[in-house]
Image 1: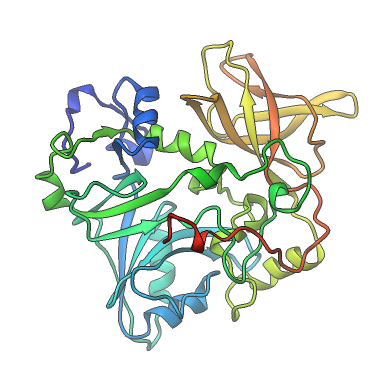
Image 2: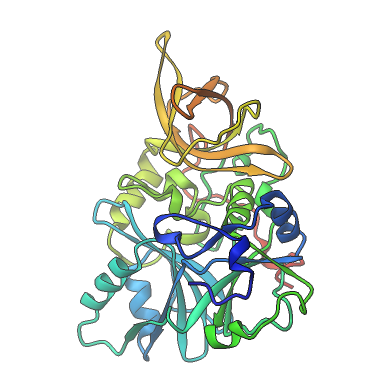
Amino acid sequence: MSSLRYPRSEAVFGAAERSDEAAHFGVPLAEQRALAQGRAVADLSSLRVLQLTGADRLSWLSSLTTQKLDGLEPGQSTETLVLSPTGHIESWLRIVAAADRLWLISELDADAVRDFLERMKFMLRVELADVSADYQCVGTVGPAPESLPVAAQWDDPWPAIGEGSASYALIDLGMPTASPEHPGDGLDFRIAICPRAALADWDPQAAGVRVAGRDAWEALRIEAWRPGGAEVDHKALVGELDVLRTAVHLAKGCYRGQEAVARVHNLGQVPRRLVFLHLDGSGHSLPEAGAEVFGEVRGAQRPVGTVTSAALHHELGPVALALVKRSLEPQAPLTVAGDGDERIAAAQEVIVAPQRENRTGLPGRNRETDHRRG
């Protein structure tokens, strides 16, 4: 249950693991606008918060996951993945470094990642604790309100291409795209980790902001082409989601799944690619996560992928992220399964390139020097 103060009677709550988290308050488009303009905070109470302490915490976690963490300085934010031996994404952690600990935010199965890390401790000086009962995540676009009680703040590096990382996005490969700039450049996502006791006493109205539901956060995330836990299934590879740019260091030491990542990056192509979908808004429904995407294959309409996230955006209308077959033509007209027998027309905007000529690391934008990081 969220510790944010808002009228529970006005909230529409999410489903499954988000059943105690506000999805919206009856005006989702207004909540999106307010959140995008820094006039709202988002309820992200379903995210789990872990703490990693001990003298070996940086080198140990670096050795097990995809990101180079052993040089992480207090105050720095990053993200990392736990992969299977075959390179598939199993867990996804957002990290904020402090002087004496790492704050870890888990959107996927936090119990599974905690179990894996506990089994890998051996004799090293590390301690891992789930502190979700005492801390809650609150999302903002731009800096959090000054009065918000914040123990640590994760500053999303997306879509900067980090040192030792690469991009699989068409927009970074010097190829023609619909937009000259990455749509994530204008959205400054941050997640504040707040003590629940102090958050319960915090008054958003007095701070000059409203509370937005998770749907508003998701709509802006989709706009920014920002992959998250919703895009991960049992087959998901880092290259399919373009998450190499922020979560993977291609030149670090060994970790589970590294050989599969290197093999795809240097020699192969990913089997699927993430796309942004503009959906026909003449209907009255949005596709559900997992809805099939159809395209013409050998003269017939056949399944070519699945929707991972969908939203009604306050400016763009109905939009979605989807994973489709790499071989699908970028100009191919698509339809998406809706309610019943409904088919929703969709136009794809390419995110991950269908073909990559340069597989040895890509020079791309780096926002360490822009105004957000200054």
